[in-house]
Length: 370
Image 1: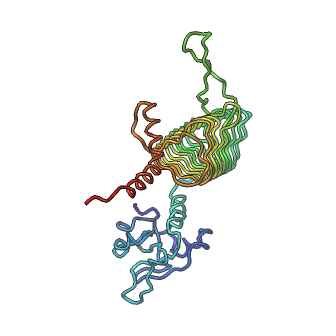
Image 2 (image 1 turned 90 degrees about the vertical axis):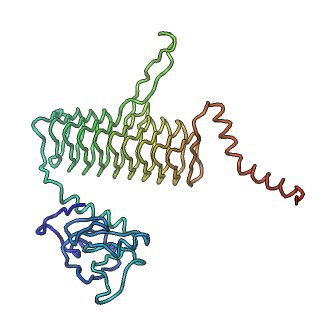
Image 3 (image 1 turned 90 degrees about the horizontal axis):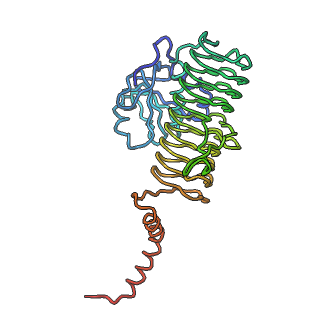
């Protein structure tokens, strides 16, 4: 990663640590190196193997010990088990920031640098934006070029709506939320505080609701109006091109702290619990409830109208087709087959443990052969 800040903008290591309130409970000590101390200026963050003497790095486990011994970084975030108390010429060249959660501390430092490399943004509404006269836009918000904001929508303090976004009627966007370019909010979408919504996200499109309509013609479908909205909690991040459908009668609900990767599909009336994280290409069919603090691997699929309890981990590519009522990790990927055959195979798979026990019991009863 290249250096981010110029020398005149760069903090000392001590200033960087002191400037982030959360570090007070994370950093347990700082040891000077033979070439760098707390007063060394830090201009950016880089990987152990390529960090320059102007960059800070981090290490999370002993498997990176060789790289740690060869790094040129001016400072390294290390867990206590990997710190060195050597003196004189034997001590590391880099200053050591001792922390038992180095990955979290790295994340805080990275955010600090990221906010300072961003161009200064001036609050206001761009002349090309179209804002309904009944909308309420905070004076501290930034409304970019070619943005559309509908009737009775509320845009909170320090919200940044980037170019090309469309925000429908009766929406609300909470304080310090960022909408990247070309995000679309249909009517009745509500986003909490400190949200990050990436480009191409569509919130509030109609759910997939149709009723057979044989009166029209054989095989025809009649559309079911989707009367609900979408409710997004605080501190939610939604990745590029992810879609979340509006509810049929109730809102689709995304809890506080939820993290959604790119190209995820969440159907109408779903409820996703607080702090659940989903990797890319997950699909959740309508009216499914997923509990809090769940971790969902990429391309996992959930059938509709099921409930998943809190603290469940689902491996990538796994299909969940029924309720999960016990916390833990679930994995299951079977090759495609005709449905009836697949059901038989899945039933056999579920019995393999018992079959193995019975087989061993039979083996013990057989006479030994020479």
